Length: 305
Ligand SMILES: Nc1ncnc2c1ncn2[C@@H]1O[C@H](COP(=O)(O)OP(=O)(O)OP(=O)(O)O)[C@@H](O)[C@H]1O
Ligand SMILES: [Mg+2]
Image 1 (cartoon, helix red, strand yellow):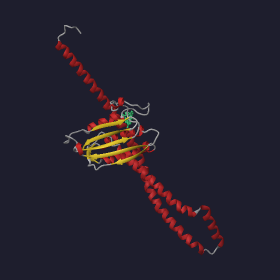
Image 2 (cartoon, rainbow, N blue to C red):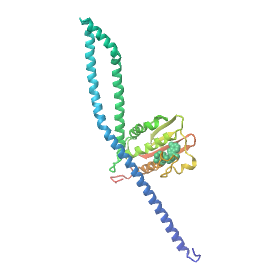
Image 3 (cartoon, protein in one colour):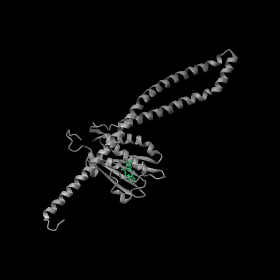
Image 4 (spheres, rainbow, N blue to C red):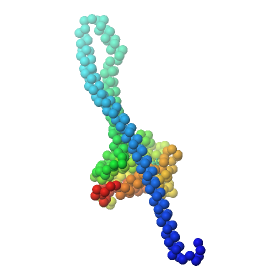
């Protein structure tokens, strides 16, 4: 730059440059947001599709199962009557054959075991049904999301059911729920937030069994706000990483394991709710993510999101 150039021109060049940088930055973040919402929609659609497909067969298996149980009861009743009538049999040969048959098929054992098997299977079926229901709740990621008053605990519980598999071999989950009012929110999006925090917590746990605590509370210093914490006693986050964990595509996980979008997605969703995410972490001891959300959506008054 020539030294004769007037200072004002330099300043305006500088300003233009800053504006360009800012514009570039906001373009980048818009692109990230797009990528994130695409990812969200894809997961949601997959979950909704699977839930829908499973829902029908589970429905009739469940209903048939109830009928089967009632039929079995009637069969057992009839069997009981036959057994009581046995001593009255005049024909010894037939009586012997019946006794031998009873031994061979282990009738007494069957009478004990069948109701137990039925009970267990029914519980299994109920669990599958619950998971499908959770998937359906979870996946209302359609574009016509509505702000509704919803219970955070309900969302967290159904999310915990969904990630149970990811967690159960690594850590115990402890719930320390406070008394929360319903809040005005986009429940399925908040579920995504909790999902990401919970999966991250599970991934942070090392070879030793860990503990994940889900805590919640209301009010206090924070005024008309609720907060939810997900705390783990896993690896913790290195100080030099702490500033970057909310960046899109920042991951310390091996290729194929993490995309590095989880936390940036969570951040965007919490921002949309006018809330905040805070994190404290000690390397080697664990991390705690706290999501704080206003009870009422600020400045809503019928506005679109
Ligand atoms: N609870 C935690 N304990 C330790 N490190 C964490 C925790 N949560 C997040 N991190 C760190 O922050 C990084 C970014 O997390 P983020 O959820 O955004 O992406 P990711 O988990 O790597 O991939 P994914 O897109 O599958 O979520 C992680 O790779 C990890 O290094
Ligand atoms: Mg993650």
